[in-house]
Image (tube, rainbow, N blue to C red; front, side):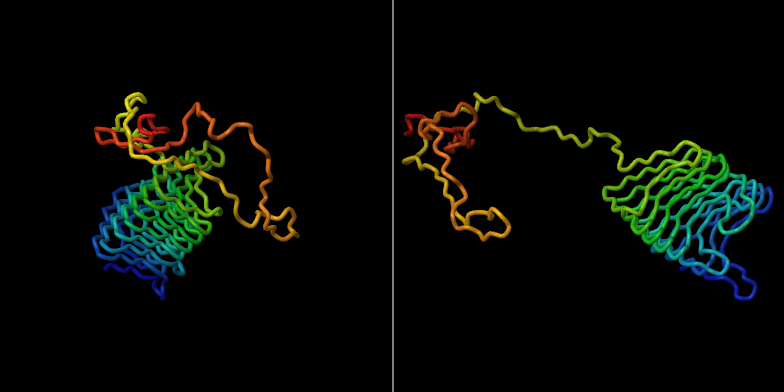
Length: 344
C-alpha cells in the first residue's frame, strides 16, 4: 500500500510524490504499482512543469483501490498532472484500478493551471486523463477535471462498470481564453448523477468540448446536468447512448411463413352437440350516479332491445373466433372456424 498524508505542521509543506521540471528539460514518468493508493488531507501525487519542458506522465496501477480524500490547510488532496504558470505542456494521467473513490473536495486533474491560487496560467496544452475502473464513486464535491488555456488537449476518458456521482460532484473540462474545450467520453454500464452532480464540457471563446455517454442505465436527478457549451463560441455536442450500427438490433426471422391455402384442412374430429356461449350480468351495479349516493344492487345495463339479427343466422364475412382444434397428417395443430359437414 502507498499512502500520502497531509501537510507539515511547522512550515506548511505538502506531503507528496512527484516528478517535475522547472527548465527546458522534460520531467520523467511517475509510475505507481501497488495494491492500494491513498492520498488524503491535502497531500499531492503527480507530475508537472513550471518551465518550457514537458511535464511528464503519471501512471497509477492499483489492484484494489485508489482513494483521494479531503482537503488540507493549503489545498485539496489531488492526483494530478499539471503545468503551472509555464510554457511547457502538461503530461498525461492514467489510472487503472478496481475501485476509484474521490470525495470530500479532493480531485483528479490534468491542468495547465492550478486552482485556488493567483499564479499566471500556463500557455502549454493540458494533458489527457484516462481512467479504467470497475467501480467509481465521486462524493461530496469530488472532482475529475481537465483545464487548459491553450491547445486542444484536456480530454477525459472513463471506462467503468458503475459510475456514481453524489452531492455536488463533477466531471468537467474547462477551456479558457480562445482554447477549445476538452472532450468527455464515458463508457459504463450504469451512470448515477444525483444531488447537483454535473458532467460539463465548458469553453469561453473557443468551441465547447463534446460529451459522449454510452451507458445502458442512466439515473440522473433534475438538478444534475450534462452540458457542453461555450459562453462566446460554438457549443459542443452531447450524445447519449449512440448506436454505432442500428442494423445490429434487427434479427432475421428463420420461420417460413406459409400461404393461407396451404394450411386448410377438412379432416374430422370427435365432437358432440355444439355448446353455445352466454353473457351474465353480476355485481353490485357499478358506481353510484352521484358521490353522495350508496351503491345500488340493481344492474346498470338497460334493455336496449334487439338488433333484429339472430345470433343463429349470423354469417361472418371476416376473421372469426376459432371453434375447433384439429391435427393435420403431418403432425401440426390448426385452429379452424367451423367443422366440415361430414364431421357433424
